[in-house]
Length: 283
Image (cartoon, rainbow, N blue to C red; front, side, top):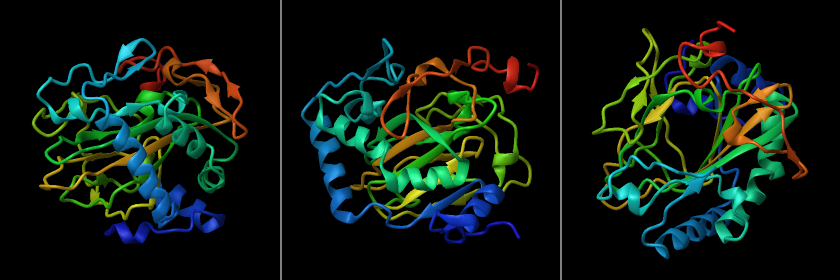
């Protein structure tokens, strides 16, 4: 029976039943995986850092993250942090580096997809009035091949429809990576997004701070704007790539082993544009 409510996706994340849920639906949520006191500390570290830097510009691989966002957008004041685990000179970077290899998360990831490398960290502030992100599939960006990536999405605030929590499409991980179209700029900070497939069942996530949502790289998901008056929807997100994958996009390299060693695999250079290579199955 199709998943009708987000509560049907709750799991311990460990053991064969969790792996079966992930295989069938493409996602699961583990309640209170990160304790409240730890979440409070994470929230404070990232928020203190961004508020201490009025015009913070985030540069990764020589490029400004979200350079297209206008100066008067609230997301310029609270930009998303891309790859903070590579910036151990700042406290949030140290926290991201520690957590991306944390056994509580890694044990679940490896139960779901086997031996794994860590590929990416991100932190979203999503303050009140901030736009959301149109529907998308993460592996369109990571280009992990032949095995897809997996996301671990840590709720740093309580998240619901009002403050722009994720909307997810259970079972959509069976779809191929699809070509995006132009997104509605009034709703999405990202310029492109996907149409909801016919007969797909989009459901609203509801997460408490400390819950972790694990989902497949082909799962369709996105979010609407934060329509609350005073509630942030902060989240710390990690992406992982199975060791069975032979390549991933250059932006995400080097990967990290569970022990913290840097690892490089093949670079996926042909999958980033629709109509080429494995994105359309025309390798």
